[in-house]
Amino acid sequence: MSAKKVTLRDIAEHLGVNTSTVSRALNPKTSKMLTAEQVRRVQEAADALGYVQNTMAYALKKGRSMTIGVIIPDLMNPVFPPILKGIMNYLNREAYTSIIAYSENDMELALTEIKRMKGRQVDGFILAGAFRDDFSVDYCVDNNIPAITVGRSVDKDVVDKIVIDNESGMQQMVEHLLELGHRRIALIAAPQNISDGYERYRAYLEQLESHGIEVDESLIVQAEAFSQDAGRKATGELLSRNVPFSAVIAANDLVALGCIEELERNGVHCPDDVSVIGFNNMPYLDQFRVPLTTIEIPRLRMGEKAARVILERLKKPEMPLQHIVLEPRLLVRSSTARCRDA
Image (cartoon, rainbow, N blue to C red; front, side, top):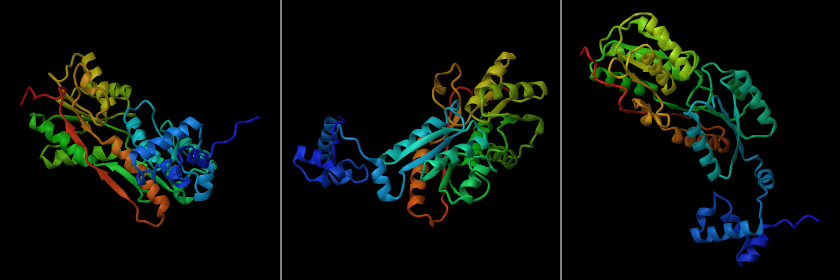
């Protein structure tokens, strides 16, 4: 015989309080109406009695599944876990759950996951791996599925987006290197079909020109991905050109680490011979043999804002598109130093 299902009334009778008090205490959106002590007592009683919340009944009542689908492009890239944490923190506070899928930077796979999750009646999507021209985003728009991009965005202004001010980040990087006396500044650019890669490349060109430095195309190499291996390969190509440079701006931190490895392998030392700067401030960069100068982005806040906006979109489908730009900041460490020829 199965055990009797514990109800809100059972908890209320156990504590000698109203059922409405128990309901408020167990709902993250209404628990703030009670004291911390009241919430604690109800939660402890619910745990002791073995209460399990019937989220399906609540969802049916609201006409929603109370679930958001999240597509992450690359599990190996340390930039995404803090964004995911921010998303989950906010959704949990609002009594939402999430289904997380991994797209491997593949639009077809992202679209497959979106269709699969929509079959499970998710209410909307947070897309962390969009391309500038992305048919998985188009699918959401064409089928009136609420969606928001975070970090990377599409060129068309069709969905809400949370992005980093890449122009500001590049300005801080270039000006830091110029202050150290560098003029021959190479760029390992990210794939141009991704908004971050395109925007940082354009900002690099604009910043050099605005400071009166002629752009030398031989100092620009393309990384095939945001990875350490791609950084090694791109740096190898740069070195093979036999052009002088005293600093390298890398597409992200992983690319920067690959760059430093390849430089050292070829007898070029960082920062004594070449300064290297990354982007994202992934964990433990200050613990490396050469702590990496980088651009810090507010990844946790990006995730929280993405979750907040998608829930606002569900409540107010007709609200204007949200385009939220977050400011990055330069973190100076040991991988950048004064140019020897300055």
